[in-house]
Image (tube, rainbow, N blue to C red; front, top):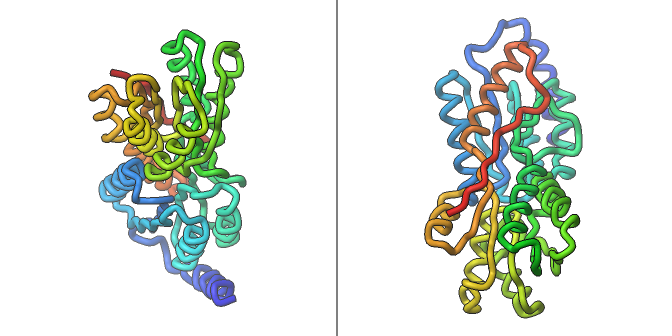
Length: 295
C-alpha cells in the first residue's frame, strides 16, 4: 500500500517536473539477476562503462537470484523516477507486475540476456535457441551421433533456460543414437551443478556427456565428475564463456562453451536506452552474436 501511495506521489511530481525542462542527464536503473555470477558482473561493467561515456546516471541493483527481491528493487527504481529501467530477469513471469508498474509511469523497460513474459521496449540478448543448437551439434559430432547425455537446466521460468534447452533438444531429438537420460535444474549455480551431478552419477551408469545451460553449472558438474574419477569418460559442454570456463577448456576438463558477449550486452543496453529516450527508433530485438569455443 505504501508503494502504491508513493507511485501516485511520483506521478504527480513527474507531471509538475515536466514543465521544468529536460534533465541534464538520463537516470537509468539496471536490475541484475545476480552479481555472484561473473557473466553478469561483466554485463554490469559494460553498462557502467557506457553510462560514463554517454553521461548517463546509472543505478545498478542486485537481486541475488531472488525473484521477490528483484520485484521490490524494480518497484523502488520506479518510485525513484528513473527515465528508463533495464532488467535482467531472475524470473520472466514474476517480474511482469513490476514492468506493468513501470509502464503505468510511462517508464520504458529494456530486458537484457533474459526476456520477460510481457512486451517491453527492447530486448537485448544472444539467440539462446541457436546457442543450444550449436552446443548439440558439437556434442553430437564428438559422440559420433551415439551416446547417453545429461542436461543440466537453468532456473525454471527464465527465457535463457527455456531457449537453450529448446535449441539443444531440437537437434538431439533428430539423432536416433543419442539418448537424453536425465534433465534436472541446477539453477545456473556452480554448487548446485556439483550437487545435482553427484546425484545423477549415482543414479545413472555409462554417461557419455553433459550439457549445462551455463558454465557455472558445467564447472560444478566437472568437480563432481572429477571426484568420481570419470574425467576422461564424460564430456562436458557449457554456455557463456566465463573466464573459469575458458581456463577449463585450456586444461582439457571442459570440452566447449558457447561464447556470449555480456560486456557488449551491457554496453548496448545503455546505448539503446539513450536512443529510446532521445526519441529515436530502435529495433525491438537487438541480437548479440555467439561463438563456439573449443580447445
